[in-house]
Image 1: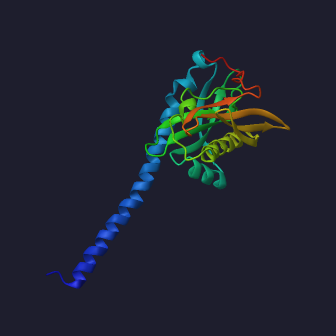
Image 2: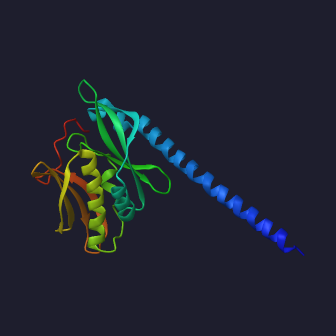
Image 3: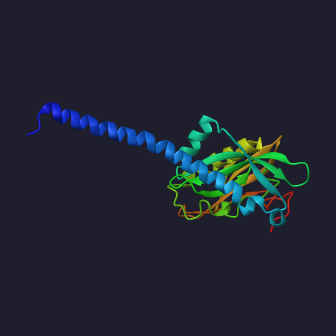
Length: 217
């Protein structure tokens, strides 16, 4: 028979091991996610192939912090993703300039799922951006609209613009992106009558694809 003192010792030892494993695993997970981000930024053809994209970019090594309240909204409305804002040195025409790049990663694996530029009117998002939410089943139209609004706020933060009205109609959820006193663009998400989500896009005020400053093939 194990006496009470020995039993308590065994239990405490087990708790200590468990606590240590948790403490160790979190930094390892964070380091792994950071490594995947940097690898993506250093190797992505969509970010680096000048001939194909009309620009090339390099990671400066810095990330722009996302405000706590905005990070909280993103975590609540889009829990399947993590969001990062990388500062990129971009060459369209000399000289190079620094622009913010929003990276959207899987909350589970850390793999980059899509990206969109803060200067969304200058350079197109990743080809995968439009499919980011496609196929998701929302609980309601309002629940889906919250997703679009939170993502629009992040884009507005990186673009140094404001978020305007959000509205639903004709199978679309739209959030205004404001610059100055006027509508500068829309973040738009398609949704069917069963609240299944479709394609995500950024459109110009006329509802069409923005006329980017760079060629896009």
